[in-house]
Image (cartoon, rainbow, N blue to C red; front, side, top):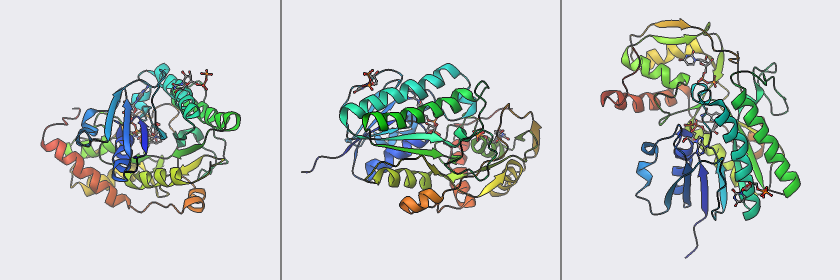
Length: 322
Ligand code: NAD
Ligand code: UDP
Ligand code: UDP
């Protein structure tokens, strides 16, 4: 019998990581999920424990990890501004020391490694939509810097390990992604708005609400990650992965209120420091490289996500803030 490909997924108990673990198992791989449960949860992966080819290791990737695998997906890192700003030093350590350890592992094993980078490397962009060649506008000493600069340094490490040690790398700059299994207390806009709408609480708009984001449904994103990793040769540039439909936070709130049949009103709160004013990917590179383009509409993806949280609200797993 053929041995299954053993895939390491760091951050595998998180929102995106749990979907990656599930997809790899469905594709016939064995999966080793490594997570310190900082923002992740066993609940995200509990349905995978019955699979004999799924293994969970409680581990912090800022520490070395010696295991034998055939492929690495490095997703460990809190992604929500609220979460990554709680312990900013740990966030930078996760990005930088975590990248060094996972690259050291990839180098020793001579295996392919994927890095979950982010659109945050573009900061508050002056170029719109953002194309991979744009170098970004990032505050190096602000409250978002632990994440933005941490991820930028991680990219540097990936490309230096590639040039210096011939490590086979795939780096995706992921734009805002949403879907079932985002932690309800995560603080990101989609989970906040949906939970507030379902509980009939006011929807919290930060700043004017005219700032924009472009939201990608998780299944589309995972398709992109798997396709990028499926390429036979290293890609000598980061690759944007995201949806190109851009929407303001006010329009997003209105859409979620309508799709969830909510009576919530809008309230306005202070805009967090350094909050980017607009964000939208140019995905021509991913399209040309592996024919990827997101397929799920915003309405369709939001309905799936609303159903996920509705179940939690009905079962009182989410109580929200008053
Ligand atoms: P998440 O917070 O749900 O998941 C992150 C996971 O990493 C959690 O399970 C957490 O416990 C784990 N983790 C954190 N620090 C760790 C450490 N030191 N050692 C081991 N595990 C650790 O976030 P997510 O949305 O699933 O994001 C996953 C990855 O994708 C992150 O690297 C993030 O930067 C990147 N990304 C996500 C988005 C998005 O919109 N979801 C956008 C851009 C980039
Ligand atoms: N590393 C690891 N697992 C391995 C191989 C390396 O965690 O299987 C870590 C190792 O502890 C080191 C880091 O990865 O801190 C970088 O490894 P590299 O070989 O590049 O550097 P060096 O060990 O020479 O400092
Ligand atoms: N936001 C908001 N209300 C919330 C949470 C977020 O208006 O309850 C705004 C936030 O200021 C930002 C956008 O929504 O402009 C996206 O925020 P999120 O934290 O989801 O992601 P990021 O800022 O990292 O793109």
